[in-house]
Picture 1 (cartoon, rainbow, N blue to C red):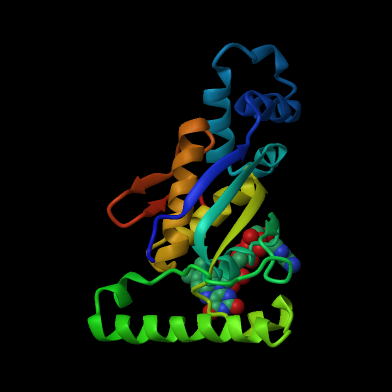
Picture 2: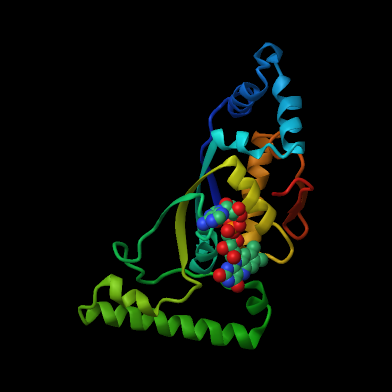
Length: 212
Ligand SMILES: Cc1cc2nc3c(=O)[nH]c(=O)nc-3n(C[C@H](O)[C@H](O)[C@H](O)COP(=O)(O)OP(=O)(O)OC[C@H]3O[C@@H](n4cnc5c(N)ncnc54)[C@H](O)[C@@H]3O)c2cc1C
């Protein structure tokens, strides 16, 4: 069904913004200016100067589920991130769950056709397994709609880049919603690193004037 992607923050260091400040001040030999809360002004300054490489010192990892293989195919195009995804070779897709795009969900005729086709594929997948076909070959009939689970790790510069592409109105609804959720989590945890992103919950978009 169409569902909200499930997102769990797996890893982010406690003092991430302080680490960024300490790393960044190496460039300016300004360690003497480090004080409680001094990271706020410093990080905002490096972003406005587009000195984004300083943000690469911190990574954040997320466990993502309840999303389609169509979405993860788009996600893994981001080459500077690391991924581990549920395997369709080692894990059976018997009775797989699936994502229905909202436009199909709202169109009765399209929905009926979509669900009949999915049911047919589910039956055929089962039969192929019964005929002795391995998961790795039976999966060739699975649709892009099949749900999956993926763990993704990226540094904060790359996360910013991903949000600037995938939270735009022209990104597809599913990846846009996922990235919006991840951005919301990171913006709450790291208000300075993502200070420039304005979020619009109505259509799950976000914009920044300091995109790369
Ligand atoms: C709205 C939208 C529609 C899209 N439609 C299509 C489509 O129809 N077909 C299609 O194939 N793809 C499509 N894509 C995917 C797109 O082409 C990119 O593959 C994807 O967005 C990853 O972006 P990226 O290469 O900037 O980022 P990442 O892989 O995340 O890399 C980050 C940055 O690192 C640098 N970088 C990374 N690798 C290299 C390299 N090898 N050489 C030089 N610099 C590098 C670049 O500056 C890059 O911007 C679409 C993406 C969007 C957002």
